[in-house]
Image (tube, rainbow, N blue to C red; front, top):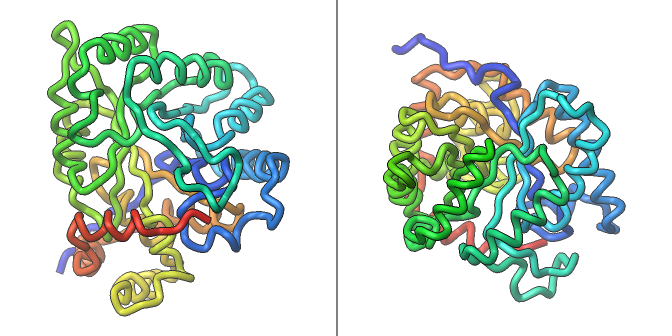
Length: 326
């Protein structure tokens, strides 16, 4: 019986993502219960600022956004303007998707369009800098898959290297069942004999663990490893983790006197290669519950009890693709 505990660590290992509050529509389950009925720009601006304030007060210092998260960069930039120029926060954003929903939550055939071209990079970098200014610390190519030009287009890679030379940490986020392949391909990309990417953001949770070995390699290579979707877009929240397939999660959470979301995020933070774990909270109560993960110490035996929850990667991503925007 293993007795060594794997603690999630300090709050500083947790970050706040803004995908759920920067636009009126997203795919997190139950989100319609979490946001104001009137999802105006003003209402979501106020909600985002309140979450940023609460996260900062709790000790969170990493904030994640993206060009495609509606007006999230704008909201984050406004919040940053209220803080001292030298405030100890790190801001990561992403480029490569263009938001096309025009502030609508439903009835939209396509909410965002992906294009990893030099033209899109040039345009979106200007847009990100206009909103975030010098506070753009990490800039990721959004949702890279093995066929992305970011892995092969030398002109684009040289632009990314030039941005890195200015002091911005350049990286990529990944999605899809081939995340591990994508991460390993990214590790092999060099410009002028030097590795191009110094950060990676990937999906890992107790349902989708396939990227773990590649993320361990990235961590060993010195990349900043950020984990997103640790709650599987709400599938691991208490209100949704009610079926027999998540019984092990509920049982372990109850044994620790914890909520399912905190237990799920603690399982992510227990991975030695995970530098930062993102909360995607849409309410302050959710944020408080998520951050309770920092105080949970999971043993190897605890983690082993969650192994049966793991789904084949193809199945997980097919399920995710079917989640409705709401």
